[in-house]
Amino acid sequence: MRRRPVRPLVLLLSTLSLAQTGCAATGAAPGPAPIPLPERLDALLTEPPFDRVHWGVLVVDGASGREVFSHNPDLLFIPASNMKIPVTAAALGLLGPEYRWQTTFYSHTLPDRGILEGDLYLPAHGDPTLGQPFHDSSSDALAALADSLVAAGIREVRGRLVVDVSAWDSTTVPESWMIEDLDGRFGATGGAFSIERGELEIRVRGTGAGEPAVVEWSPRGPIPGADGSLQPFVRHDVRTIAAGGEGQIRTSFLPESSHWVVEGTIASGDERTITRSGRAPVRLATGVILRVLSERGIEVSGGVEILWEREEPIETACASGRIPSCAEMIRIAGLASPPLVEVVAAILGPSQNWIAEQLVRTLGSELGREGSWSEGFAVSEVYLDTAVGIGPEEVHWEDGSGMSNHNLISPRALVSILRHARSRPWGSAFRSGMAQGGLQGTTLSSRLESFGGRVFAKTGTLSHVDALSGYVVGATGRELIFSILTNGSNLPASSVRAQADRIVAELAGRSVRE
Image (tube, rainbow, N blue to C red; front, side):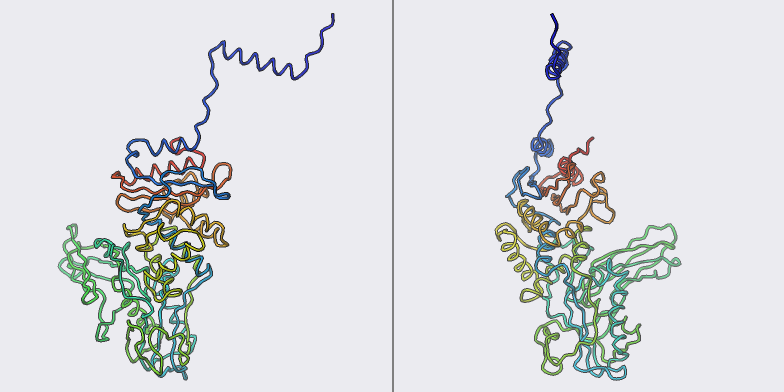
């Protein structure tokens, strides 16, 4: 009797059956099923000692908005520098990515054969780009501003240089900032006319033993006193001691006279560089522009005056606070900033506090009643409500940089802002302006290096506060939007950040432990 040929399907089933029988006979078992992503993330949040941390986490699909994972997504947390996310997104949405600050000179007369009869007015509007990283230095930035006058043919001003800063309030810092931060660069204060990120760099060099040390500072310039006289911004009394000795340098700011004082000792041959907040930014910037004008060959014979209050009468029928709109005022020359989208990148990537605060007050000046924190927050709040759907109860504003521990926001609000930004024409530039894993010059330069070009996020750190929110591209190319906020850990910040990085690595499709 002839056997029928075995068909391929029957042969395949027989092979599978034999293979299964063989596995059973040898005791081999199939590999374990992969653990779902939500379970892996839950394990990271509940792993001791991180089970005692207050976590707020939300992950959504970038394209669809579908929720991938959540843990306390609607609770309010102190966000630290994640507060820069709503500020910069609102600014781009309200002002547009091509917005530029204008720093412009005005006068009621035109120059005649190089001479300007009368006062030269500089109504300032808070340009945050007059210094690094947009220029090599603040002197270079103000030199470009002075060169615009040279190009306009001005060689002499037979009047005063009048700097009008009345469009902004005179508040130096939010009231909830820590006093200990005010002298450091992170607490640098701003104003309508400010330079070099509000910072002052003091350099001290020892000379011969027993002799005065050399003390220099930049930005370099005098400051106008209350009587209009020019005074040195830094007063110093540092003595040189013998080489190898242990010097000690002390710095302090005198608010009543707007001076920095540098005192102490330094060893012969030693050099020290100390970075401080300028603390009197408008006075310092005014002194520097006066010096730079002189170096460019423009002499101002009438001295300098700063207008702090609005509606102070000036020449003709004009008044402070509205010089650009006065019919009798003539635009002489000026300097435009780089576009806002570049400024936002300078805020997000390195987490620059001072520029963020300048941006908040710019929003108030341009779209509110004045250049103040309260007005800047008010217009931002309206934008987030109408354009993003985030109500005022979901965000508490105290500053724009995240320095204050009175700021509050939820992971859901941050993710909503990030997803909104993703849908805007400026969304790609906003994302690429954030810190990136392993990218030098950003706050993720030593974190998530394995995911360069796949993680774009804003970091945030205060005492017992660590945050990380942004975008991550998974192994399949799918983009996820996430927000990770932690408060009250009472753990080393480095360990909390490492655990947050493990969460992001899981989203990217690989564990940093492997």
